[in-house]
Image (tube, rainbow, N blue to C red; front, side, top):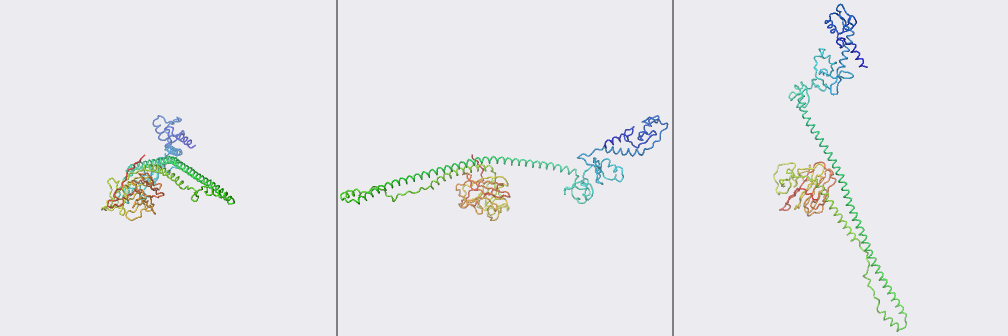
Length: 540
């Protein structure tokens, strides 16, 4: 509807000469209207004075008068046309703050009024003398944020000292001695920095995507490992169940055979006894009959046959004892134990192969070594030098115990290393947290940050409160140490015999853990061999 009215107004309030909206419209005697400039110029070029619309001829040049009513209407039409011709604001452009309804695009912003104007609403600043003194700039949004709150001046400079935007007056007051540059110059610097920041952010995003992939791969691998271990475990338990059932059957069979043999012997003895009883009963009957015989001749002849008793066994030493089944059961259990040990060896061998995949190349840190310790140039060996060296003070250094840490640490995931202890009679080995006391006589237990295995005076211990005494492994040559930070696990292995020694489980780790080695003191050449960090040799 509005568009229809606007179209009608433009057509009916247009000069028929210039075809534009009337400018200073005048009316001729015939009643037609023209712009004063248009009709004047038209008559200047004609011989006769006539109306351009109806061709009525005037004998004298008419005296033109302004049509006041039409002039006001034409002014309104021109304003409407200008507004219609001005484009509406686009999303990235600054809107006019004065427009109501549909906002038009601002063409200027006033730094005195803190307002942005479209072409139409800007007119007062172009014609009113007082407003012409205002400072107009290219359109800006949020003008109040671009002005200095203290001086009400445009923020057009940047203080490099305090990293804030300032106005010109700020440079002679609060920021007088500070280096300042135009906003554009600092913008270009910061834009260059933004490029690096964006690159860093993209790199961080890529790293996190890679970490997600690693985690997903780990989960997938965990599923495969679980399936494999379930299958292997099923085989192991099936073998053990088969061994138990076989042992049970063999035990039952042996018991039955022993019982059968015992019963057979008892039956044979009973049969023999019954036969002797029968023979003795017959002799008793003969004795009784003879005792009642009065025929002397017959008596003496019969008595002679009674002199030799029937052969009988001496039953005083004969007995039937219940068979013992303990030894049979022991042999069955020994066989089961041998099978279990064999399966345990297989399991430990597989476990050690698996954990050796987490090998980390570690080297000893001389800044942490006790002054008596001697480290090899490659940082792989350490032994007691017997003399306390003069070294600079270092808060990282052990001063009470003969310990040294590695340069490398673990704060997540799994971490494995191996140390040769061959020819050593005393040593310490394991991991310790970063914040351990390195100067005092602290008890070296998990509670104080130590998870260590030690060999001392023929005793093999995992140091705890109380310590766990372990079977002494006389032929121990190399110890493997596994740390599973996330699972709270520290495990020790006899590498050469492929045997699990001990595991500390349920540990809580809250800071980096460092491998720790302690070769202990040597006396008169004893225990002088070094502890050696060895590369992992994964065997098939």
